[in-house]
Length: 174
Image 1 (cartoon, rainbow, N blue to C red):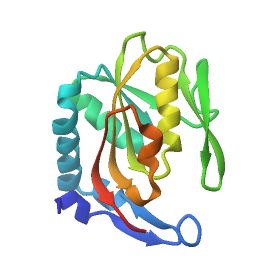
Image 2 (image 1 turned 90 degrees about the vertical axis):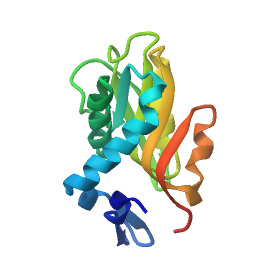
Image 3 (image 1 turned 60 degrees about the vertical axis):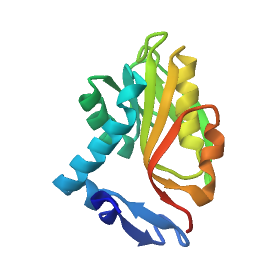
């Protein structure tokens, strides 16, 4: 077990009854854990030739910006509606309990950019799939997708077929 894995807290019944929420805030609040997870992301993705890192609101901003700095790549935020000030494009996706939408600035990526999409967690895959759709809509390529935590029992990886995908930690049961 990696040190940072020991820092992930499980919170029962959040945000609704029956959910076991994986809380990364103890990990991000610990300098050693944050450095270790950043280095693991860097070692995993350094050969992918990324020009940009797309981080998904909000916890993807933490890991995505650290990785962008470490790789010498640009950082592009993908946000929920009404959060980006310039012209955007959007992609909607289904959640277990409804629907949501992500936005990216229309000018965030140049044609041919090589993009790594980074988030903290993969659950059902809708959010990451929407981010892939946004990147491709801007004529950029998805070089890879990375998350710190994968809830593999929810089979979200199935929505990401065709893209290189890596998770640092996998939970196979609820």
